[in-house]
Length: 471
View 1 (cartoon, rainbow, N blue to C red):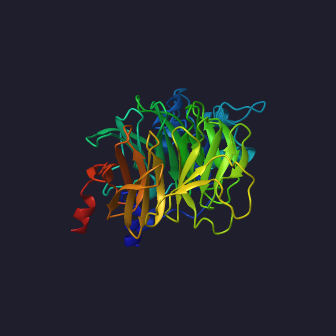
View 2: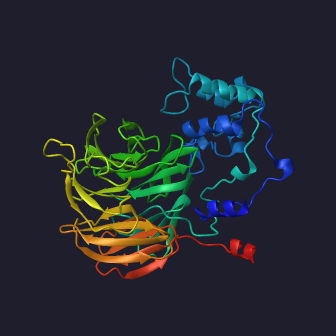
View 3: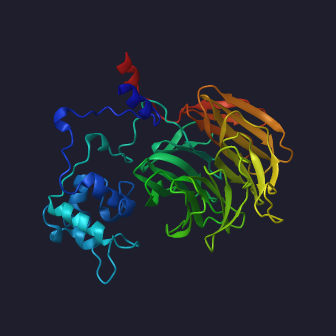
């Protein structure tokens, strides 16, 4: 059991040291469970605005005692045994079809309200397991005992910052790797994507907590302030992308849907379920009027933003034409040509708009394929001038980063990672450096023209707890 726990925890670079003694085991289910029934409602509807990183009304709902106490109103939010006198119940109960909370959202359903009232009537007990009580915020950031698996890296448009996905946080480093600038700590334990807005003023974060909720966060980069957070679905979210005009954000979901929201308000403006498996990455067209998606279902699809309609399968629909799912998609900086990567290891360029009628067996939109990398391609990127592409792959515990010439698919340089697969690649603003990261938790800064390593570093401070315990 210890070996399994250590392996699972090491995926995040974080070790759980708390265990339950015999007298700490959770009691048998009696009545309404806060952890199983009430907390998911609060996570989906309330905690985006009432968490340590964004304390709407000075009210934090991620900490049980603070949730009972209330916020700036001065009234106790929850009075155990007294739902009618609990300020929270007053705020979430609709009057004439509208409720004060959740602010700007639909009121909770009748069944959700009844569950909350029943839980309070039964004493508002907290049955959260001891191992789930750890709370992270800016004052209590994660402590790492191993470097986390890194699923996302992104250079800022100005070239001064590098955003790195961590555990419960995004780490903002100086672009040359010379130091940590800030830690953006949020609710999501797993971060899948962190991307700067086109003007560099904001950062979108897609992730969540596996098997519990997905989350989109939008941060003000300069102020290190969480602007808003949305809880969506039951598992982590993937492939967040900004529209070129900076107004919209798209992302993929494990419920086989793609969604897009207003970047200022978080309002959903697109929902489409054309895929038949998890949507792993998204990108907008040059004019911000279409979204392109890739999925585990082996397809790249085109969606129209305004009408929310599925337009076309960009890739071939012939069975067996693509060997396995697609993991990543990127767009040329100035034209609607799309770079994809997936299970067969071959990056490919496709045109977005079909120019002739589809025929069974054709792959007409394909412009060119690049030499294969070993294993699966998990990340692809264009240089800012559109002249180069980069791809990162993983096979049998090893990774590779290849840089190609866009025009003729010629391999420019290559870099091998011996200690783990590569899950994210990105070009610096001057197109000279490729940053790559993955399973081993290292950031590699690679010279694109030569494939030479400029620098590598671990983006977090590592404690010695695990090593000391093993000795």
